[in-house]
Amino acid sequence: MTTGALPILEIRGLRKRFHDVEVLRGIDLVVLPQQLVFVIGPSGSGKSTLLRCCNRLEEPSAGSIRVAGVDVMARSTDINAMRRQIGMVFQSFNLYPHMTALRNVTLALAKVLGKPRTEAERIGMAALDRVGLADKARSYPGELSGGQQQRVAIARALALEPKVMLFDEPTSALDPELVGSVLNVMRELKRGGMTMLVVSHEMRFARDAADRVIFMDHGIIVEEGPPQQIFSAPSEVRTRAFIAELAR
Image (cartoon, rainbow, N blue to C red; front, side, top):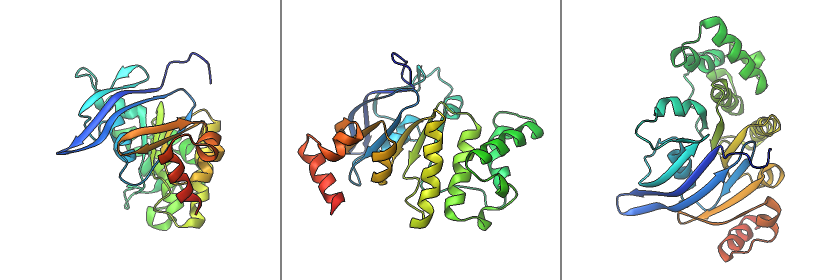
């Protein structure tokens, strides 16, 4: 990671209100190139809403979001073009059941980017290979385990060559024995230089792989720092209580 690098993701004063409830209450967050930033916190703290605001799946109520220097909120910004720069992986895989793994991955390449079929399939196969599923290219989602389906979903996002990947609880719908395969793919993406913002309960993975851990509660960032600090010597009372609860 180059020092002095411009942020891939820069969030300033982000607020999100649903009717009378303010879910995000002034979030400032910077993610630099090749960083893996991990967001933890209790349910209802605003973590998923933060991710969904980054690509305007939720419209922020106030604040600014920049991706690779481009103002995501500006009226002049083509939000669909921006979304191609922002890979998103949800806890549900959202694959088309009637399409093969390869077709799920190549659909956006063909329909959105207008790639010829042969080129789309070449890129799609390379993406499946990155997640260890080249041999499942012709399989349908119903023939794959949950972990394999999630890896296809990651490949689908990767195929568009995003500048940043957002992961929203990517392992929470998986059986415990399948979680490792998805986390291994995320580790490989980090080694390959992918910038990632991850919301997850996989604390061991956060300790091992994250550059920075952010603890959110009640719509604000309470504390952030290196994993070692957040997990072993948090300075805020709320962070300490949350970490202690995890350790029980």
